[in-house]
View (cartoon, rainbow over the protein chains, first blue to last red):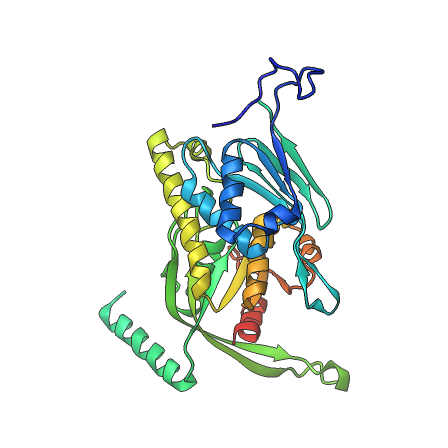
Length: 129
Length: 231
């Protein structure tokens, strides 16, 4: 289930060796906004189930996060206990007319744990064992 | 419950509904596992319906509630004492009644992760733990589905824990997006390390009512707030 990179090869430029670690995908706001709602959630969950950490620049709305939790619960099994999700709250514009989602981090619950979170800071531990 | 008592209860609910000409509001008790949701639901039922009736059982094991339970026709009727301190009549309170007809909906705890191995720490064998984990995931899905059918939410948080979890943020965000009224109840204030102020600081845009559902502390304030917000 987990996608681990063994340290047997060279990095992309043929330079130094890379060590065992976790893949982290930083997804731009443009990419996320180009996807439909279900497509977006499927993309995230498939990536996380592969053992990757997904960081969304644009973040997810509260409704999308709730749908993601629902979708996750449908797929929990013995090898996939669920996800860890952390994100900044929505930022509202002047006069509260427009809300803007902010960064969201999603990872496999077996490997990632949020240790501290407030409205502008997220600290997480990522286990490589 | 005897047949006579049941008929009496049904009739009284019918009369109250006709008198108020308003359907009961469905109030969902939401929150993370082990926040005390079933304890709160039981407390409300014991206070206003029947002290021997339970909505569900509470234990220290997470996800003890794995199905949504709805208790219809709960009539909350409390007297509120309002003081006129500004005119020197602070010793003579004005009594105001707060009334609310509601259906209490006790929900399974919302979580992003359910690992069957966590249940084995409570002495369950692997098969039982896996069965419970499966039921718990179904319970979370059911609780989320119920949000479409809820008129108001009591978001219950454990005052001894960090309140700024993503689940709490997501529930609040969803309620705000749907325009559903929400009350945050900071539970377990009877415990020495309870810090309800931490919850107030984390969610300053919402009214937070500190309570102990287990001991019954400050429940009158929660009922008054429910009548005000959901009534």
